Image (cartoon, rainbow over all chains, first blue to last red; front, side, top):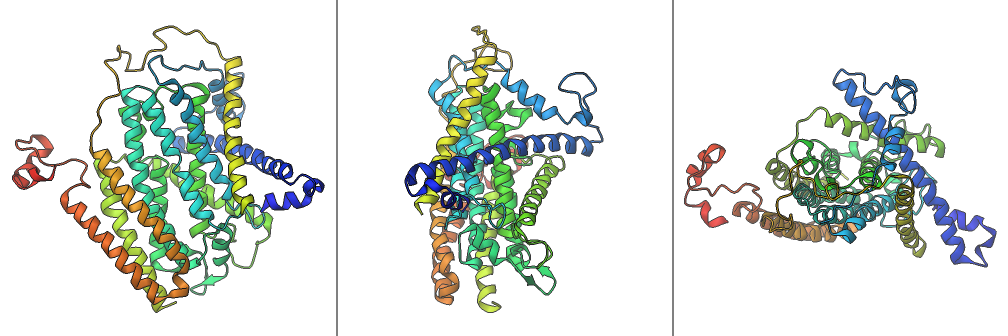
Length: 358
Length: 144
């Protein structure tokens, strides 16, 4: 949508349509990258501080001179980023070099292109494609290829174990997540992200905003299945068995250092935002205001979307410091014997609910 | 339409550039003093023992196979969900039959024990396998 507007706005669009299109997309993509970087810095700082407060510590405070200084350790993530760029770039001599180098690119592409369909506000969506939500589900699982490549090419036992576990986990939890999205599409009859949000305007039950979360008991259940599966797809605790520090060092990324590692890290945080953004769009009304009919201008829309996503990211961080890690067999049992039967049942439930009650 | 997916293509190409530029900067500013020890694989400080490229447990393959079946099923569900409201009861019954077949498949896989990560087919199990092994001795051996 933004791309279309930019193309119409450029005076050169008639003469060189192709070139104008490429320039318009680049003008969209660079702010997205800046957004991801800034968001990652905020999220890393938030994670450090929230974890510290939960454990009754103060977290980074930075009393010294230099970059660690400044108040409340606010520059801690910046110092981390600088440290990572100054690290020696090491590729193990026994690794498969080509695949080792390729892996962070694939993981980052998977995380980055998902942002092109996220609806930040009424007007702020880079490409409002008609299969938006399906597209995001598809590309967000691209990262698993990169993780397998990283684990296999490192020629390291920790990496291989981490990668295999990660792949098994991500592909398993993709199914309940997608089945929960099917429930949403059954009610909205559209796969466009903006269409799904527009469906959720107005009131339901007389006083609640008409978010799908509150629409009926089955969508309420579907939200939790989707969100928990999303946490598992991001390899976050309590589903962090692929990179359990105390067992597998750093999982698939054990051999990576410097910027290569930084991009895995960045992609992980970007994926958290994508999962939260999709959950906010599909179940919590995206840019719709919580008070129907008020605060619904595009500016407020951006605010609501970001705050809903950030709230869900806060939940993920909260989970991390609240729940113990699941064992690998429990992890698979939760997915295959818990979530998948429940979400299949959910589809029947929503179907009957719609046919009987409407 | 071509604008939507052309955007995706350019985004993907730009992502490559955005990863490459910091890597390039790192190669300029970061030190590089490679030694054979540094380039060794990490194995908790020990000398790495053999290669990691070994045969891997088959259960990952089984999970991948089951995933493939269910993922294709989910792809079939999406177009159905789009027209569900238009077609109402007919669509619901048709997809109910389709889902029922898959649920039977899931129940079969479940009963067969392919969803269990740890297979309790140890004849003289110790520790946490002991109780299960004594319960299911005889019948579980066939489900490898």
